[in-house]
Amino acid sequence: MPGHRGPAFIDGEIVCCLFQGSRVLIARDGGGMPQLPRLDARLSGLPLKTAQYLGRLDGRHCYGLQLPRGAEPPAGLETLGLRALILEGNDLVSALAGQAFQLLEWERTHRHCGACGAPTTSHAADRAVECADCRIVYYPRIAPVMMALVYRRGELLLTRKPNYAPGRYTVVAGFVEAGESLEQCLVREVKEEVGVDIRNPRYFGSQPWPFPNSLVVAFSAEWAGGEVLPDPDELEDARWFSINALPELPEPVHISRQLIDDTLARLRS
Ligand SMILES: [Zn+2]
Image (spheres, rainbow, N blue to C red):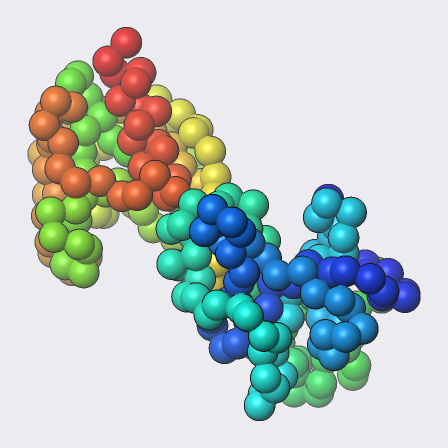
């Protein structure tokens, strides 16, 4: 159950998304799956009053916090990169750790007002910080990214960047620009990256991606014309693949893969 106002009095067992730099500290259950550590609020010695409160999980208060510099992490925990944790596929743990990381990054980069430079303080009502001097309010930043899977009869248009794993292809994606609607961004991104026109955009779903603050909005769209011309500044390759001879695809935790699987199911039916 999400929330951003923590209890006035903190006692008993709490759940922690605990970070040391950009790495998260996790426990393992009997089956080896990652779990968020449960700690005794008072014995943990953690500064919970200044932590990001995330809500309740199984009746316990849940916090995201950065381990103070030089502090020893609680015993028995494993340190893991956030991407590695997400790839392990425990959706609830990944979602909470991702949310905590995003909030902690926002907090770390908004300690001072961007207009006048005065220190910021917590906003009285919202999850936000406020300039103590000129009263500007800063909310957590979220950057929308449009994702498009272009298809035509029996084929998907997939792309790869030079830094992808060997043989792996995925869908088109790019940041929404100021003043642009999601639909306009979809058309522009596809045209810029692969040179084709689209029609019939169809919303599939969305996924927060905390590196550092993206919200991926995924659509499929039908090819409406044009030859594939990959943007050489961004892509190593882009081409049509038969749905019966697809290259290596992203892992199932990525919404790009879920979008591809959903579109394939519709094209095959
Ligand atoms: Zn200010």
